[in-house]
Amino acid sequence: MTDDPRRTQTRRLEPDDLPSTPAVRGTGPLDYAMPWVIELRIVGTPSVLQVQVSQRILVGRTDRHSNEKPDIDLEPYRAYQHGVSRRHATISARNSRVTVRDNDSSNGTFINGVRLQPQKDYRLRHSDTLTFGKMSLQVFFVVTPSSYEKHRIAYAEIIIPQMGDGQQILIVEDDEHVGDALRSILEQAGFTVICRRNVAEALTSIDEAMPALIITELILPDRNGADIVSYVRGHPDGATVPVVVVSGAMGGYQVGQAVEAGADVFLTKPVGVDELLRGVRKALDENA
Image (cartoon, rainbow, N blue to C red; front, side, top):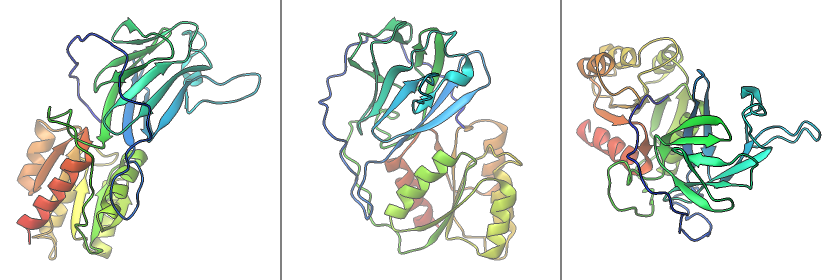
């Protein structure tokens, strides 16, 4: 999960002018648009929704008459009482950006308190507050096609190079959507990938077969991801195995533990496909 309290500066909202064309697909053995992984935190509750957006998803609540459900169903969070319509809004991803469109909802859709014109796309940014009727959700990007916005650089089409030759990479990530997205990227780059959800599962995999590289989150359900780094560095076959940390917790005590244990590369969420691949290449080159 991410843990980034930063908020965007106030900005003027204008309808998005990106043409409504199909998403440009990344180059690789599997040729399809990379999904965005987005975290939606429901304000005032501990609830967090994590979704993949590869093209478009519908946000709303279950239709009690037909039992039809939108892709993001807010019914369990008192959507009706908060004025959320059945087909309230659509979130779309078109490679360089994520947009939201109000579908003529009864009570409106808002970004950072500004009401959107119906049937027009508006750009969403990391840490925006998105409100459907009276239900507010904080938006956090977790995995993105590019790190262009995070680093304020020009967007470029993502080309996934052939970096691997079947080497095994172990991903330790408790969120299924994030793990699947990272797996997809690295498999396209030519690696064999296995995913584990916690430290205990990861250590079992390492004992069975030491991978060529490890990617781990620090915040895991059972223990700190830094424990994986320590275990690998103490293993007879693990002294030179590169470890890349991809985490939403990139400050303070946990990062200090990972540094002391011997992690090689640190990447913060949201992580772009381009910076993930650069990090993997750097870790492999430095430990060659």
